Length: 183
Image (cartoon, rainbow, N blue to C red; front, side):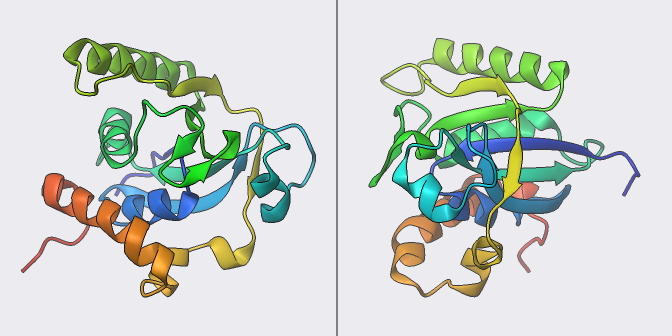
């Protein structure tokens, strides 16, 4: 692996779902759950869940662009959540569950906007993509008990009902992007 790393921050509903998928992706060196682009200092999970902090639940993804491209990350991101649903993912409702790409560079912004335009033109979904593309303003790591939540709580009912299907979809449709290839 090269010394070249890049970071992006993605919001697509519950951060446990995104973290579980991106943890399995080759080229991804770290995934951390957190909160971004709100308006109060040091947000807590409880405050973010109330929906009035402006923060989104996010995953901060560090990756090696010589192994996996930013566009590949975004293709997976768009496949594992509903980018046409404004401020909601399944039963999770509120601006904290919005779909957003918080870019870290002008290049990431350009790639994200171009991909959204392409996907909308392909009419993959019945409605247009509402994913926000905004500069990362701030980031706070979520509390320790949220980190690697799915890895530690796979049998928890929410994980079984919501996270497992997203991980399975990723494994099925992006086999070539898995860190560990099945035997």
